[in-house]
Length: 121
Ligand SMILES: Nc1ncnc2c1ncn2[C@@H]1O[C@H](COP(=O)(O)OP(=O)(O)OP(=O)(O)O)[C@@H](O)[C@H]1O
Image (cartoon, rainbow, N blue to C red; front, side):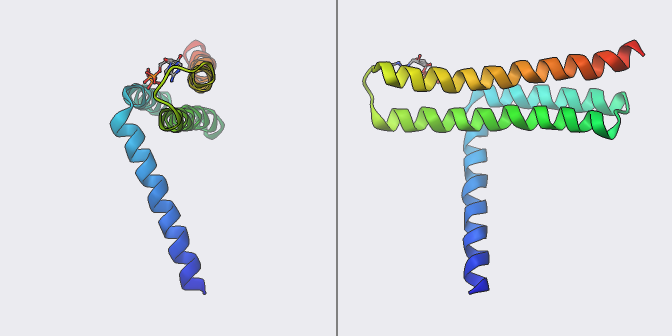
């Protein structure tokens, strides 16, 4: 019984990892997010951020990455449903893209607040 539960858990983990790899491989924006995240972590290490500042930065980074993964899932589901132009397909894709934009704007605000405070002090 426990072995079956562990096996199911490991399978779910494997599928989730495959999804993350797929987003990295297929989405140009994911590469842009990763470059921005690497830059933020490098600056954070250089400025010796406090643990609470790291929490803000790490949350922002993963929020953007998760939003991009969800956006990719919505795009794939819409493409599976229809290859034709449809107003609801447009709503679904535009809203999913909007979610990524909101997450990215959040990360810029957090970066300005955290790094700006450090640079000014
Ligand atoms: N089936 C459709 N019906 C109506 N509009 C669509 C449809 N597919 C795409 N669009 C419109 O074209 C836009 C771009 O869609 P597309 O599938 O090319 O995403 P994308 O450019 O690959 O997005 P990303 O850069 O995030 O990967 C959508 O946001 C939407 O406005």
